Image (cartoon, rainbow, N blue to C red; front, top):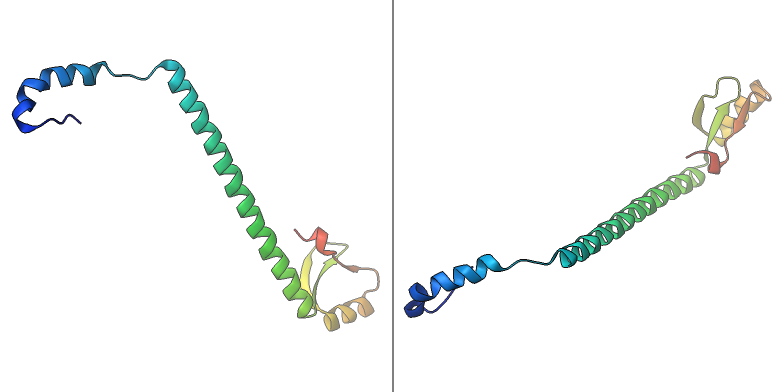
Length: 111
C-alpha cells in the first residue's frame, strides 16, 4: 500500500512505486521463516493429536466406568470370537449353560 499526503502523492508516486517494487526478502530469511512455520505446524499437529487421544481415552474410561457401575461386562464366545455386553446375571447363566465356552474380556483388551 502506497500512501502520502494528497499534495505530495502525485510527485512521490513514481519513487514510491520504485521503492515498493525493489523490496524483497532474502532467500536465507525466507528459508528461516519457512522452517519456523513448519515447526509451528508440526507442534500444532502434535497438540491436536494428543488432545484427540486424550478425548478418546476419557470417553473410553467413562464408558468402562459406566459399564462397571451398571454391572455390565463384555463376554466373548471363545469358539466364534463374537463379543457382547451382558449383565452379571446373564453372564452367570451363560457360564452355567456352557462352561468353558465364554470368557469375560479384560478391559485392556476391549479397545
